[in-house]
Length: 91
Image 1 (spheres, rainbow, N blue to C red):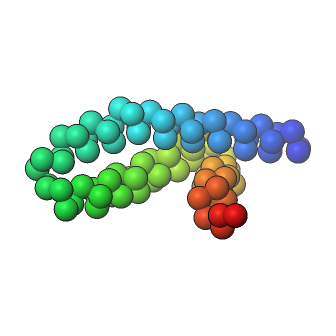
Image 2 (image 1 turned 180 degrees about the horizontal axis):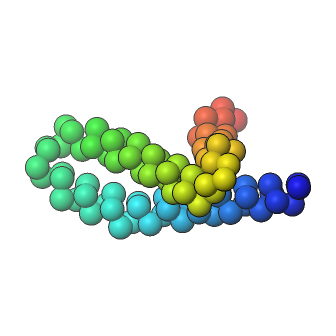
């Protein structure tokens, strides 16, 4: 049972990172490049934050689709890994 959960967690982290990398380089950067002149310099950061949120939502959806039987735990694992790195106090 433990091996199965370890496999599920490892696979969900791998799928999460793969989706994030693909969306970052194939969707977010070209969209920011094209939207920059349209929205103006003041709104580029807001558009970037919006695209980051959409990226994270799409990643959670992809992980949930890979693990249809029990999507709760695999969806939480990559987010927890990312939050630990970004929200930890700097020393």
